Image: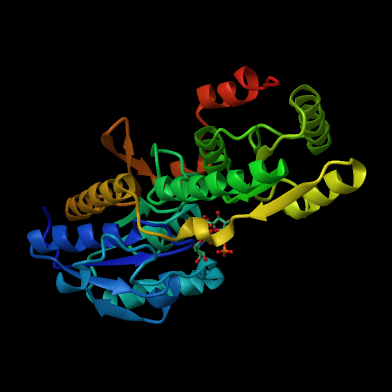
Length: 333
Ligand SMILES: Nc1ncnc2c1ncn2[C@@H]1O[C@H](COP(=O)(O)OP(=O)(O)O)[C@@H](O)[C@H]1O
Ligand SMILES: O=P(O)(O)OC[C@H]1O[C@](O)(COP(=O)(O)O)[C@@H](O)[C@@H]1O
């Protein structure tokens, strides 16, 4: 262990349930090693403007169950410049910080890597995003809770869909990744799913969707039909897709955008446990002088992955789940 006295943490990019659990684990573990923790508010903005607070163990009691982040989050485009990174490095030195922990997604990891070129002390990333789109860790903090939230909403939509025997197009988050979409679709028993990793031809996907709805209804009569659609896949989203279905065919459909509810709520046990594990491990890695890495978990083993590897490689969807949904279940019930 090195002689570290003070480390810092910030949360950046899209908030994710479990970020508070992670901050708590960092503070409690640091306390164990007699290291104090400074928190920067509002992600990289706080780092640039020295918006900081000493996080005591009192401040992290009773936060494990809360969504959001006590440090607040932000997207800070100006952090991409050399000037900003130099300013951040000076700010860290002025505060006597020995290591920086960044909880966020791949954008935040780019930021951590960028800072590392100008500040030569340990910088460690912790994967915190509902999208689960970070290579090198089986899951990201927040992903499991987001699936539960989406699933709960889809189950409710199914009630009204069944009552009116309607088609519902339900848009889920994920930016450009289909992890939430695939998991929500499998766990809700959705009739069909449209994901960026699977559908690269929107017109073909539309034809297939319509054919399947029509054939299902020829066979079963009027019935509900649930389609999970990843955001940023259909131009104009599910509202535009529903309008196309309604206008070109005599099929009544309703669009629902689940939106930011997927980012909120009390973190699931899995997210709390993952956040706690990664928070504690990040502190240990920092104290050992490790830098330029993301801490993650693969097959229940803690791992360290170089930051660029986390965005240079694409994390695949579970191929067997894809097969189930698109081959085995691509049948008319
Ligand atoms: N190439 C980059 N260089 C430096 N900082 C970056 C870079 N890309 C993103 N960031 C910083 O990380 C922040 C969060 O990134 P963003 O992509 O919005 O969220 P996430 O971290 O959740 O993926 C950005 O607002 C910016 O401050
Ligand atoms: O809250 P905003 O800025 O509208 O961003 C929405 C985006 O953030 C997310 O919720 C989370 O993404 P990140 O964790 O990569 O920031 C995406 O699923 C979504 O596309």
